[in-house]
Image (cartoon, rainbow, N blue to C red; front, side):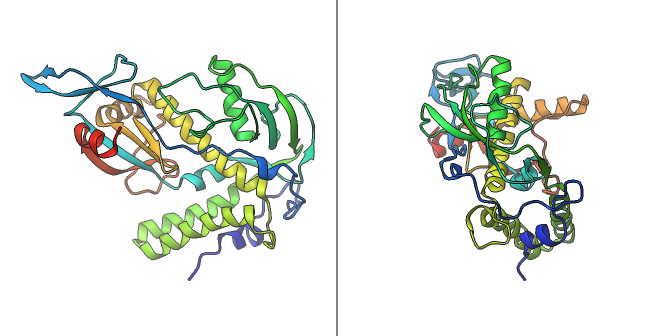
Length: 314
C-alpha cells in the first residue's frame, strides 16, 4: 500500500500560524525556475607520493594536491557513509513561507525571511571541500534560496566569502516549520525499522520523497509549493556541507562526497569523532547503523585506502 505522505501534510499536520493553515497554492514567484540548487559530486584531489616506511613495512601514500600535512596511507581504512533520512531531517528544521512570496527588491539579506535572493557569486577558494554552491560551474549572479544564502552569510562572518550583495529578492514576512509533519513521518519510519518491516520502510521512504517532488512540480497538486520543495533540498545541501566543514575542524576531513547524501572519511577520523562525542561534544558525524536517528550516518562500504583510491579514481 502506498504511503501518501503529502496527504498527511494536508489533512493531519498542516503547519499553522496563529491557527491558520498556510497558502497551499499561491502563485509562485516568477523567478522560481531560475533558482540554483547546490548539487555536488566531489573528491579531494590526491597525488601519489613516495612510499614510506611504517612499522618496518614500505607502504604507499597519497597526499592532497597541492601536498598538505595530511597523508592517506594505503593501509588506512576508508569508510563510505550514507546519511540517514537526509531530506526528512532537512524538512524537520527548514523554515518555509506560510503565505506567498512578494518581491522585496534589493533589501539586505535576512535569514529570517524564507524566499529567493539574487546575489553576486564569487569563486570558492578552499580546495579541501566543495563549494557551498555545489560543483557545477557557477555564474556571476544567481538566484538562491534562504538556506543557501544563510550558509554563505555565515562564511562571510568567518572570512571565507567576500560579501552578500543582494540585487533583487522575493521573500515572505511570515514563516512556519513542517515539524509536526516530519515528526509524524519519522515516527512511522522508526516503527517500520524497529519492527523489521522493510516493505513498509521503503513505502515511507518513497512517500516523503515523492511528497517533496510533487509539491515542487505538480501544478495540479493540492499543495503546489515550489518554494517549499526548493527550501527543503537547499537545507539538506547546507546541512551536509556544514557536517563536512565541521568534521574537518575536528580532525576528520571528508575525502569525497556525492550522490547527495554520501561522504567518505577514514576510520581514524571517525574514531576522533567518537572521542569528541564521549567528551560531551555535539559532533557533526554520528553513526547509527540502525538508521533510526535522522541526519546520522550508517556505514555503506569499508575498504583499504589503496582499494578506494584505485576503485574510485580519486
